[in-house]
Image (cartoon, rainbow, N blue to C red; front, side, top):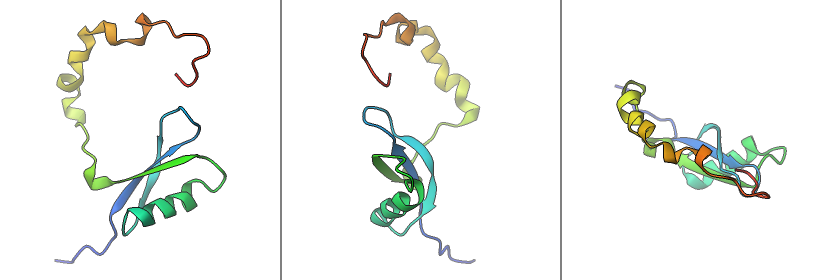
Length: 96
């Protein structure tokens, strides 16, 4: 059996402007978090696309399974008060 010699995979998130969420922009391999941050800056913000970068090692991300979508997300359907249609957004609120 061959030993895996590839560096860990890192997921990259960029915040484009203050007050808006970070957005997933891609992935890269790096030896550690500092290298991932520097490489993400070089690869994903060459044209001033962002003001903040997050790097997260992919092995630490836990995701729901598409097969479980019904049982996992269905309980939220009966909580209509959580839908944004019940709230009035004040004038002057940005990025909402």
